[in-house]
Amino acid sequence: MERGPTVGAGLGAGARIRALLGCLVKVLLWVASALLYFGSEQAARLLGSPCLRRLYHAWLAAVVIFGPLLQFHVNPRTIFASHGNFFNIKFVNSAWGWTCTFLGGFVLLVVFLATRRVAVTARHLSRLVVGAAVWRGAGRAFLLIEDLTGSCFEPLPQGLLLHELPDRRSCLAAGHQWRGYTVSSHTFLLTFCCLLMAEEAAVFAKYLAHGLPAGAPLRLVFLLNVLLLGLWNFLLLCTVIYFHQYTHKVVGAAVGTFAWYLTYGSWYHQPWSPGSPGHGLFPRPRSSRKHN
Image 1 (cartoon, rainbow, N blue to C red):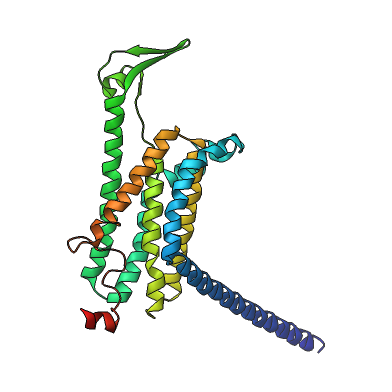
Image 2 (cartoon, one colour):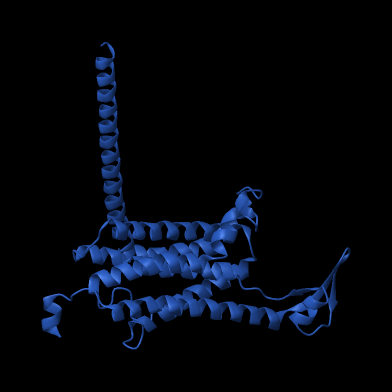
């Protein structure tokens, strides 16, 4: 007879705890959703500003030109100074794969939700195919430069002994070292990825301004791209501080910037190109249509 009220009180307490947890989960989801919407709106506004995009080019140039001076003011034993650090192996060495995966998802969602046309979506995604070709072509060109400018050396306790072996393959087969002018492929790739991602992500501000569908999944993908862009900036700074010779880094960044200019700054504005980011996605104002 005395256990009934106790069991009932226990069940009532359990129900209250479950209700409390349910309310807590709802509050957390609401806060996460609010932060997602607020963060995506602010990031889109920032990346969509033409003035800030021009300043971003100056920022990258300053990082590559003046960043190496920081090597005299940082700890040379930090984890980022090691070629085998986690970020260098998992991210820098696979920077194009990460960029293509994250940015490809963003471009796919934005273009398809704006147009509902597969052909237009495929055309905009083809910019990533061009980017992959640029990356592969640049890598082969850098190896060719190293082959043409290099010589074969045998490491000895007293120093390096020059050999007359004619090419890299025979030199490495003999167990020696081939040393030539090595353009920093990491600096090239990170610079190119930074410029490319900033250009593609800038479309989201215009996308939101036109009131197109922008649910949580799209906003989350956009913010993931923003975070990846921030990571590429940080790893570019680490690269110019700790690795490669100065001219090798500057040349790599210059080639990356030139590759961006040839594609996004020039070719993509032509009718026979994959098109610039945002091209054909948004209706033109009535005034401009009347004028044309």
